Length: 322
Image (cartoon, rainbow, N blue to C red; front, top):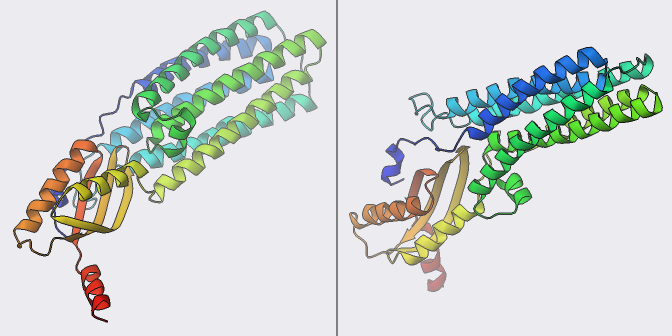
């Protein structure tokens, strides 16, 4: 295989971490406020939301660890770097969201159904939930704004399904779950107060748990694909073929393999048929030109391996000779 990219040291992906820090600070304030409200109201839904926010704080810390770890330079034992650190910790966050957040909320709700307890000081709970909803909405807006910035005009849900920025997808999923959970908690608390039946509060806790589990499973499935070695965005392959088509010394691409190694870090391996009149010096020069043009369009192509292909040419010649 040819190409100086084999010795290239990958740069950090350079994406902003503002969305993670914003979520962390928002959840710190929210978890304290919810904890106070849960203590005074005795609400199971409020307690479920408190546990949810505390778990989210831990999740954001894990995401920061993953993103920082992904930026470590390559070593002899990890020649392609540590980019998949971000994917691993994002997967751990999905597991924690499922276990600590979802399962505990359902447990608390079932417990309150079997042993209902009156909800007190509802006004305090409603006020805290409204305050939390404002903070969570601001955090969600920050995540969506970052997604719009990275998505290059893609529709939001298409970006969520196709992006390899696992940290951003996890923060978005957490914030969506938080907003939905807060809505359920508000409704459950209001119904408990109006009807005098504390089982509505318990139902709210169960509903919050189910929302968290659905979001956690979705995140786990998305991140698992990245951990196993998902292909890069289709736009990268399109860029490769367009550059090859415009390069006179490159006649055809016979095989393209892309693997997402981390956020903003892609490995590209390809087989190319070159002009048969090129000298041994002309092939490396053509590869260098290709790499420069591709990196100008797609900076995420960190490792580029180009193999000259002669088998396709020989097969065509043999077919023509029949």
